[in-house]
Image (cartoon, rainbow, N blue to C red; front, side):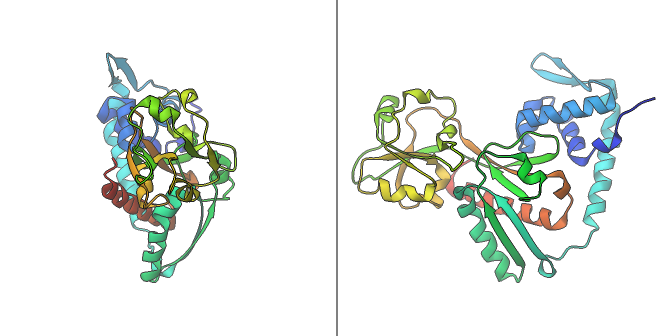
Length: 305
């Protein structure tokens, strides 16, 4: 007797399957869906266990579907279409709902996204209440225990019961006061500059965003602050520098001068993360859609990709 649990075949798993089938690559499918590659691999592993079939086998640089995978394409698409029709039919009027959400995030995405979201909501007569909690090192239990209903973080927890979607991606920049200095022109000059850094309450440094570089060569910061909003007073009228995302120009670091880093560095992505219990909730879906719309505008305005 087959002992698989068919309830593990939710819409997220089925959408991942179709995307891998279309892209013939786990990494490309993850990029298209805006999730990490490890999360996509996690989902594929779940589907393989439930169906008892490898579904995809490696061939050169890509994947090719098994016969079972090919026969599943049309039925899976049909299930997704019916699920969408089911949720679309549910009535939801944000102007008649009293919505309240707790959101875990640091001050950069909080200040860039949510003031505009709240202003627009109030102007439309939508009753929305927001409660913000520090995200710190992202902890899946915050969402599982319902202490928050949404998380915005560059480090999404990778577990089966959480959904994630890349919200935006932004290159790293160096911030400084042009009346006092030029931006560092070389890696060596950058390493030897006097830095201002952010360290969150949980002890995690914001410098983890400098991925792909040898951070041991960078001089220890002259000033360490608890949040990004505290940076500008220290940089103004000084030769100090700070390293943060290009999006900061629209938020906490507006008014400072900035320039590209003098070395290659991966951009930073911010992910939207929520628990599976909230996936089909119309109020939660409304909030996610509003956040995504504002984030798209921010990326366009900053030139970040």
